Figure 1 (cartoon, rainbow, N blue to C red):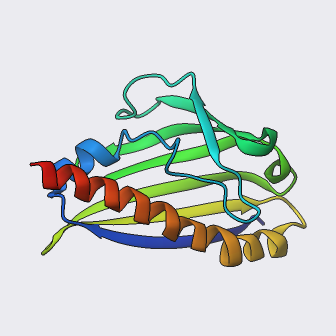
Figure 2 (cartoon, rainbow, N blue to C red):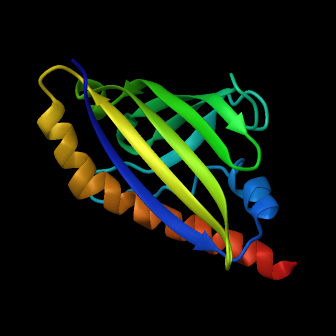
Figure 3 (cartoon, rainbow, N blue to C red):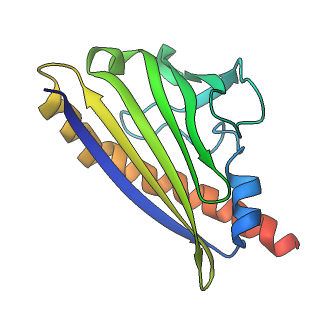
Amino acid sequence: MTTTASATREVVTTAPLDLAWAVGTPLTPVGFYPAWGPLPAVLNVHGQTGDWDAVGQTRRLELSGGGAVRETLTRVDRPSLFVYELTDFRGPLRRLVSGGTAEWRYMPDRLGTRIRWRYTFRAKRGAGLVVRGIVRFAWGPYMTRVLAGIGAELDRVAARG
């Protein structure tokens, strides 16, 4: 049996749904995913196939501390949902997780767009408790910080008209 650990966070942006999707979905993680506590920063994106808007596209994220992870888009329902799988972890997470799934939902909101990000890690055998602790005490709060930056960028773009 595989143990999973998940966190979900939301942000509301003033950007209308189509704009939030058009800017937020292909947004590079570089600069929006800084190092925080034990979690590494995203330093570079390598080998991205396409504009990050179609099932099957992949990219490899280079992380601080020598880590890396591969992302593969598995579902794209414009303008409401995109999902990608995370595999081939390098660095400390390699010992703890076999993979992960990230799901981004864009929903109309009276103020603009609500974005809900859900991240699920699949723990390796015997690592479930550690992974649950990392998600609860580090990854969840980290997601809040990342979404605040993305929301601010979408608000900035929306304000420009």
